[in-house]
Length: 428
Image (cartoon, rainbow, N blue to C red; front, side, top):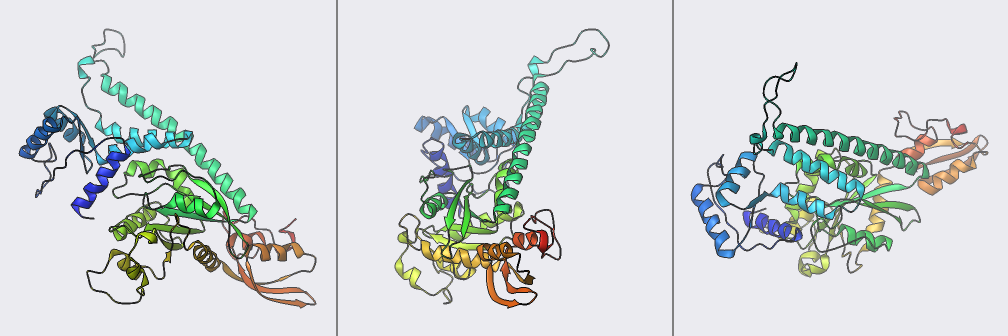
């Protein structure tokens, strides 16, 4: 992503937060100024622009240190935000549930704690007399820091309870035998619009960054008749604040525990390749980098048909369109327009194939009095051969790992495999 493209995204973030960008300033430096990030001359240029446009806010497209924030605000005499603070502000505005509000609050405290300044040291008091009361009293800064740490511990405890509850719901969901597909992607790629199109739901879908924060799960029926759960997750972004990744641990575990990730990318975006890579980096950071992924290119109604008609196996020059570079990177991505309803059947068929590929090959004998086991296999797996013999039904095919575990067919099981009973007692 070029500098101008990054600033374009920052301007969109600014608009999402409810502000209007009136100018932009850039500077090329060999090294960042440790005191004010930019040079003193450039700082004076920004100050002149503030007066010219009667502006009252300056936003930096990077993360600033506490000292830099303090020095810049002192020099400009206005409010200063960095990219991280702006994103946190947008998340706070978009938090519609108790869980999301807690996650944002924790992230904001984690961001602000190291940036507390000694602006209250004049409130320091001298304690008088008594054992343990001699010497200087606590400064307001120290009191504030301890109060923030106490509140952060409290929030972490509440979110841990949420995480455990999610874990219980996931295990119960596994017992129902429904596979889970998580929709991931860069913010504003069309994830919520896709979930609405697939499920007929009405999840909030706006042309704004981070329109939805809370995961939404809906039932969807695949072409083979199997039901799956599609979960829409929070959108990712370049330079996603570490505080958010940590705070949204419980939410992002939905991605980590999914059977398949549907990575939605905006095919019309000139920065689609960079944004796909940014999403992959976050997935790796949360431990989901090795999950099966189905690449989906959305908004193809906004793309030149000539570009879409080219084979992904063709070779192009270095100046090939970004979409074609992405199609070289990922074999056979699914092309859709969620808003127009184009390609959704192909997408569901591809999801069915991808889920089948994640199943394990199984060969076993099911006793005749265990008909429920065969029904379970038909409902959630794939049967390749059936042979009715004297000792039972000889079956070969593929099963989701949880079903194989429930039927006692796993050579090695962990706590996430729902049952460890042998076949004869698995369905009792």
